[in-house]
Amino acid sequence: MDLVGPFPASGQRRFLLVMIDYFSKWLEVKALAKVTSQVIRNFVWGEIICRHGLPQAIVTDNGPQFASAEFTSFCEQLGIDLRFASVHHPEAMGKWKRQTRLS
Image (cartoon, rainbow, N blue to C red):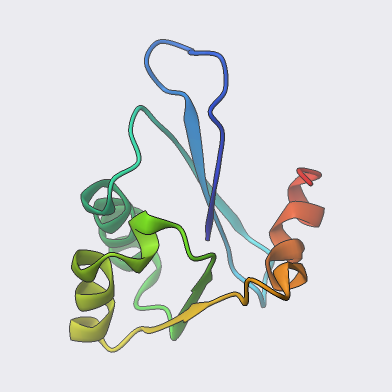
């Protein structure tokens, strides 16, 4: 899971939140006006868990929205293994970027 942006405003939505299923390569994308841990949590709950079930793991970068106590606690309570791509090995986040041609 990663964030893309900011883009020139389309309405008030300047960011894209992108999540890819590593097995099926299915993309879930949501345009966002702001990127807070609460917004990320709501996306994971409403767009991922309620529609597709609990993910076994979420891999993301070390962005403050993902590393926040609120989001890490949310994942922990649901038994989701939250993994952070190494700062020294950003290629770990490359799969979705190749999939969407955003590098």
